[in-house]
Length: 408
Image (cartoon, rainbow, N blue to C red; front, side, top):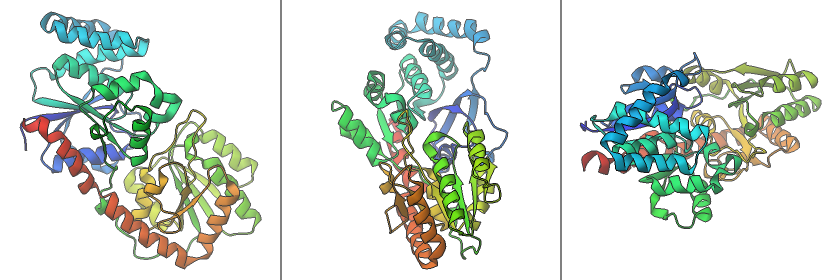
């Protein structure tokens, strides 16, 4: 193990919907890297994944009582102003250039983080999501004269026009390197910002620990349709519920379970009630990954009808789709941009247009009626995940990007 460490800046630790980050850190630790974690907030859930017990990294939580901590944070900034005036001026200019209350908050937090890391073995800062965590990582990096990097996911790139934001461009410019979790996202960034060199952006898919998702040995008899994801607009769950209504009208026997939590839960429950689907559709609520595996195993179909939300937010290669494919559940999703990097229509799954309950219904009926089709898609889906989304292979690529800063 190297004596130098990579610092991860995250919004919350642990977070139920971000198993891929935990898996990434665990894999890096298994490869000998020393990780430190800065969490901007305390965890927002009592449900945690069992893998958290294997985390060796020290986690430092920034105080939740931000306003009471302002004197201490100002003192930290004063320390760097006195000791590293040039760095402090550069860091302050970043905040002023994009001034807002949020920017000021991140600037203050960065001083606290920098003071915490000053004199430590930290040699590189890596932040997940190109939003608040990356802003803190960038300013901290300036204060400590350390490089930073970040991955681009989905909401942090596309929602609310962020892809076209000058602030996003400046963050891309300052980063040592940038990771994209899909080739489509890299393409969109390069087409939007021609001045960003392609060599700076690396496509590394979020991978799975395939030992946690072994291929199931038998197909379930129950006609269970499973959906998993946060209950937010981009997941498209209202269209799945509407498709379930059509299945019921067609007298197709089935059960649908939707696992997740989010702001749209009450709206989805009202839709289930309005359509009189209480006997067919169940909103299960959030589950830890170890519990979720049992749901994958009993599902006949995995369905995630993703859409592009009104604010342009979207899914980019959702991990739950990979998990279902790894276990051997036939997958039905939509042909939103980039999804074909994971699901190839009629080969590793079925794709239908977004916001189309009728098309979803037709595809669901096909999979419920045709066991051979489901088996063929499930076999090919598992092979796709093994080839393209194995955690060990993909995290090795990230480790390679970190190594110049750990051993230089």
